[in-house]
Image 1 (tube, rainbow, N blue to C red):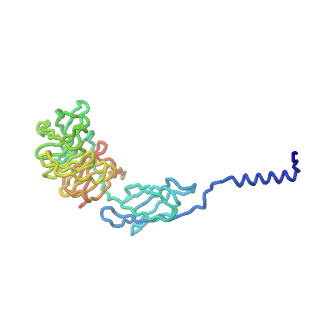
Image 2 (image 1 turned 135 degrees about the vertical axis):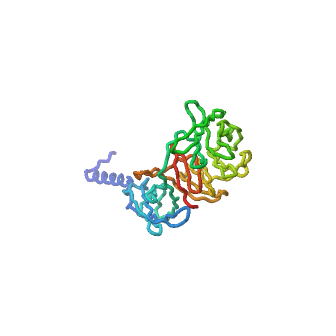
Image 3 (image 1 turned 45 degrees about the vertical axis):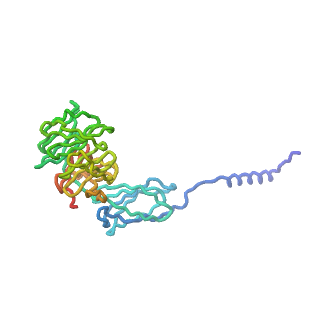
Length: 343
């Protein structure tokens, strides 16, 4: 028999159903904004000393909730200490040293205080550069003279150019190089010959080049495709596509030692009399090492012109050193000159 509801019972029923429905709804709202301390000390990678007056920009990348937080910046104090008050989430820290943008580091901020200590590389900057298109290798000769290897796209032949940057370069043909793809890579002057590397990845080679004729005098097998070469006064050194450092005998016919490189994507190597220098495109930095390649120092390279515009040189290829004080490197058709620090 149907049950009829009085208006009073109907109202009670509707209020009960409405209350149950609201109770089953779950609304996710951000809790009260929690804040924690991110603090640490910034020091020099090479010396270990604390660094004062380092500018740190803290940029929000992603927060755990929809909290509102503006980008902040601070400077390290006299002891290298810094501190931020942050919500939990993901951030990017940008570090500047002496006005030069050095590093970016992405960090996670947990639901608790965090200690974050960080080491920065040193800086080498230069106001000097020269335009030199298609440079695939670079070497210091003597009496302020330089040499470089490049490709003549019109004739599909190699050229060694020698001279100084002010007076221009003078071509010396290498038309008898048999393997033109991939191109030659690296250049040194040793034992009255130019040396460069090339060949294919399956058949890598080292080329000995007659400086008088510009012809390849000898093709030698290489352990890997080599990215750059240097000369220590007695022996040939090279970095391979596997980021190993190879120590050859003086004729390039035998590998005496193999070392693990300081980092990945090594693209240049040079010897300055006491130290070896290698550039890493992964770290975007220059490494300084002794001949054992067990420890090293790190430098970031910058170009600063007369208007104080700063370019972080992040893609250096090919290095050469003329003395303990001078180093040259190639990036984007420019040759840059650097004064080396005392090591």
